[in-house]
Length: 190
Image (cartoon, rainbow, N blue to C red; front, side, top):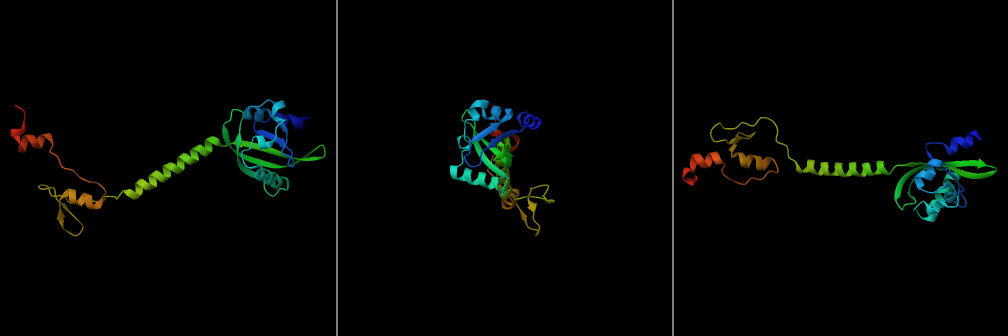
């Protein structure tokens, strides 16, 4: 009995499954809460009712777990409210009353998968932005009067031309209020 209490009261989600039929033999309290089914309901279900993979794939993976060829799986499970959750499964054989069953521990990784997708999208955006950026760096000699810039070959060019050549920046022209006042005083309102 102490081992059964360890199963029932464990903080991890746990199921006992018949690997040949897929019938859920037992579920601990945490699994019942996670899946949204009462103990009596979930033990009348088959893992095919929860796992959204194809029946063939599920049966194949249960046999692999039973034969101890693999004990770690990634699946998607449907809970009672219809929501799909990403889960990691750790499963292996256990003998109960002479019957070989699968002892299965389930970890809900839905939020982790969501963050991984968001992280990958952000990395893609950053890589794209980085590929579009041309860096201007170092010291740029600039004429104190006409504001032309001298390049590394000694040629002088307009600042707009230099920056356009060495970056993806584009320029449009306008006149600031100070220059309008200085160079075009006649355009000032009376």
